[in-house]
Amino acid sequence: MRQLEQLLNQAKKLAKEYRALTGKPLGITGEVAEFYAAKYIKGFLKLEPARTPGYDAKQKEGNKTVLVQIKGRCIPNDAKPGQRIGSIKLNKDWDRLVLVLMDEDFEITKIIKAERHDVERELKAPGSKARNERGALSISKFIRIGDTLWPR
Image 1 (cartoon, one colour):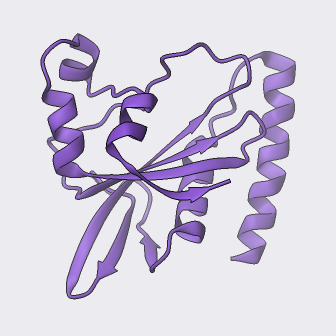
Image 2 (tube, helix red, strand yellow; image 1 turned 120 degrees about the vertical axis):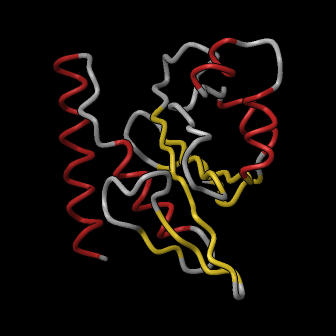
Image 3 (cartoon, one colour; image 1 turned 30 degrees about the vertical axis):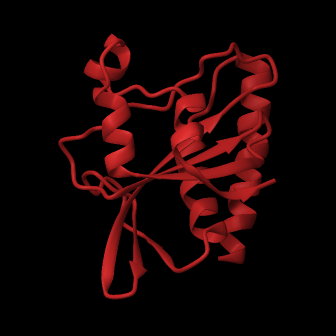
């Protein structure tokens, strides 16, 4: 685990340099989010193999296994308001959604969780094509319906 964290720290540094040179993200946000969600969430969170449909990890809660989808979002200092979480697919198996928020240096600022029924209710609420058709939920809405697991 320590070796993996050291490797991710190198990747974060490279991603920051890449963004400074190109103005584009390198694309490591998901991997960073999964690693730190597993590290910081209380209770054992076991990451699943890449491209497991619907969820990224499993968590034992008593006799129950909870399927956890992990989303990561890097928010630069100059980001516009109204940032959204990547597409949330309701046709896949998952029980809980965990959002890992990072600053522009890929440092974790907050980890929030929400249960599927709460996310589903918000996605199906009338009024937003982005929400209803694309499964795009705003970060501020997710924070309102979720519980903070880890503050900076």
